[in-house]
Image (cartoon, rainbow, N blue to C red; front, top):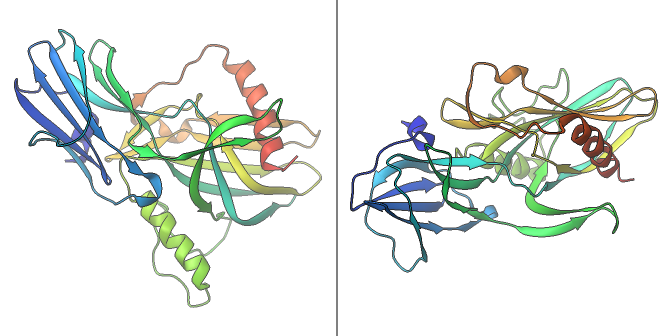
Length: 287
């Protein structure tokens, strides 16, 4: 059962356990108050759809092992968004005209922590390796994780080659080879259960067209939930308003009733929303 991946459980003494993480793996071992943890990482672009655990396993071989000492009994593998923004590109330049909106769905690599019920983290690591890049000007730009994903927008009344969950279905004959490969690659990422599935809505309520080239996704205001074994976040809503202001909001309406795994910090939320919102829209508009 996939839901077991993120639940607290009490491991048996002197037994290794393994989580399969879509090509990466994490092992955990407890002996009294001694905990040993090992992480085998994978380049993000080499993901494979195969996730599950924790299951009893043989000890890891030729992988560095981290040691922690704690009196806790139960532990869980918990996914968190990266503290560094994610940077992704649209497959083509996308122009959103006044009065319209576009949606993007993306699967983000998490930071994983092995946590005790007390909230203490025994271990933290990133199972998927990515390159870093500087985005924006030298003074107000941001260091981002550059993801090898090319996004295609979804539009109102569009008959697309994806179902309601964002997975690729049968593709129309008119779809080009390049678009077909892009959609199939996007579906591969969205099939991975150890990634955080994030919905982005870009609305243009201004009087000028908005050109979207790249998206810098700040996740420090996102909650993370579990939905039938899949990790999902709150929806990011980006709006260019009629008075020329730029706004970013986090919409959690669609997440009501879901099991929350990660709770975003709430300190100074309004200030962060305004500051990050302006930076975010300037970035995606190429300003």
